[in-house]
Image (cartoon, rainbow, N blue to C red; front, side, top):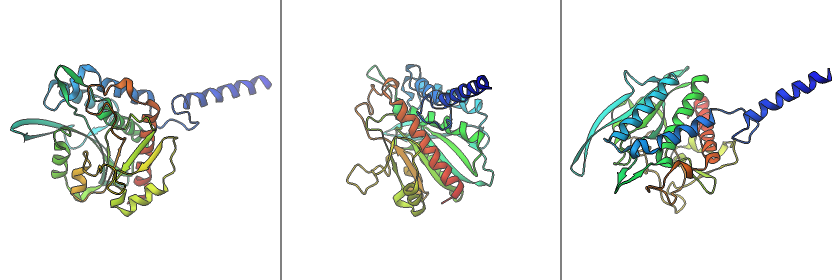
Length: 303
């Protein structure tokens, strides 16, 4: 009997070690943490040439993103994954494409929570590739991890995964999306932009000040990680106001509640040095766990 007790203890201990390999937590992983990092590494590699809107690297990144949604068995929103749109900026005509996928809600299929990140970055400038690991390969890769979790744990509300194009050219992709959807069906936007790199281990959330229910959710949130979640950069603390700084801006302008998650600017912001090797992996994993935990709370209890 003693031998079998030892064998059982060894087996249980091995499971515990496997669960806490990356997060340092005894809780089971919510998603494949190694895959999260791998997607961010791939999307910020030189082969995608900085993912500039309208360029070859952006096309390649879009193909990669669609392939990942297909592998996860996440269906397109409407008939196709691609939402094509065009715009002019400073005399230049662009054709761009958002990527939209969905997991249908089990209780409220006609009410949408949009989880978003922008796929584009700055491309190649003066012969240097702006790979945009933090900005925003990190957010797009998080879409896959959240989808992975929700395929196994179906949400109450329909979740639209939006990988927006042309954010760097004036939030064009999110503007087009908001202008061309039934806004009565939109419950919330959760936007992720720059969530993988923080020397201070700090993730900011913006948007709760504009909606009492969101404020209550954030104030009551029990953080499952050792990374800090801070409310700020929202026009109340004397810091740079991020209310309109990324793809949540058009949602806010349309009166749709939003939560934006991001970290503060660093020396690699909009620089060719924004590379995967300089992200902070544990913080990144924790950031996605925080965002997913807050989503779960809102999905269950609503606004």
